[in-house]
Length: 187
Image 1 (cartoon, rainbow, N blue to C red):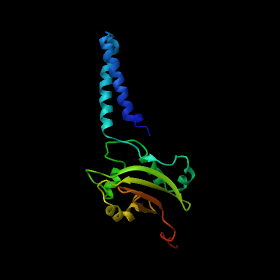
Image 2: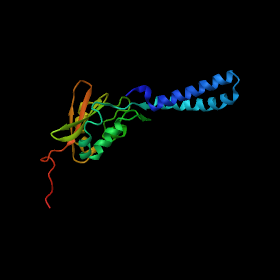
Image 3: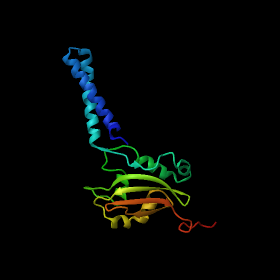
């Protein structure tokens, strides 16, 4: 996604434009135009700047949203919501999924893991997602210690798989549990 088109960037550009129009009108003695545009433009510009400083860009979506639409409809609702959540702009947080990483104890206040990309996939007929994180200061051992909990955390009946595709990165794959792993109770 183009970083120039973030909501904070658009607000900043709009506020700067109004301020510039107001200043230009002031110096050309067009007081009817200068006062409102300048006094609305400066606060809007400052709001845009403050949003820009707390902005977290969305994770890169590897597969187009339309590719697995039918599989997504049959999958746990939480997985679809998770993909939508991490592919939008966030404000006032250090990274995508900040609250979840804190609860899972996969958080480092100085250097938190950053979600780089999310990919929807179908493995053995089951819809799942792969999230690639930049590990930062959180060690692979901490991720592995939370492996079982990671699957249960995002939706009921999921299992988590962890892979290290490159040094410093980790792939978290969430898929439904296999039938033999998830025994059904007899009535």
